[in-house]
Length: 304
Image (cartoon, rainbow, N blue to C red; front, top):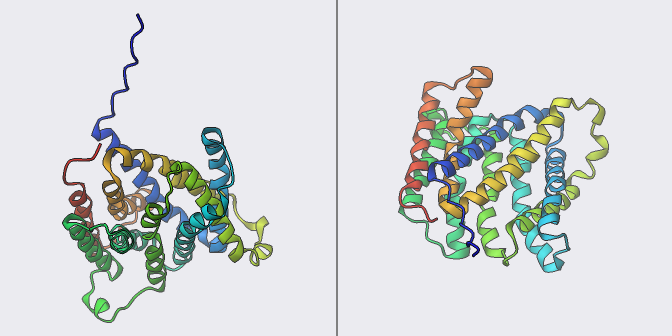
């Protein structure tokens, strides 16, 4: 008499949150790695190389699991709309990191979940909810505190770094990503959708970067820059994709997205470990204002 297979035991919540902490740490490193490699390549070329390498690494998995076939014109239009927002974000990110610093960009990025909620209200009629609203207010307050270094006079005069403005423009685009995925998803596996977002993203970037490619001094690009591009393509694109998609099934998208509120303290920790460099106490206060937003969103029973 054969026994029915025993379903695998679900991982404990602490293990799922541990994996999300790893993913958040990987994303936090992208701001530091991006800052290090932006001087060597044009931002559009750098973004193109990241998308192209990520697509080449991701395609074998998708082909083995689901098969590779063209999605048709309607599918290409859907994926191009989503990738347009994503490409704009990464291009502005690399551009802004030439001017501003990783901590400022990490702090500004914490506004993305709240702005995404506002977009979702208009596009999908999803309510922001009291917890996400409170988290958004904390994130906005902390981000402004970090950007203006806690100086009310700089805030009053709107003494903004141009790089911070560029990155905030990128965050306005990045916040569209999740609502557009929900709006334009037609039931295909998320891995398939992600691959075609990367492929159409490469097409967008080729339109921008084609005229710049011949002028790139390929021979003078240091090996460290190539390693940085490979790291961004594999660890902060593909690995984080699998972790976040898997964790979303157990925690829900809102709680997974809330881990972006950990980016500023993680960037501070990484900068200290790498360079023994800490921001001023006044700036650190802004980081501490952002941190509770993550725990506010996590409140309540996860949807397993």
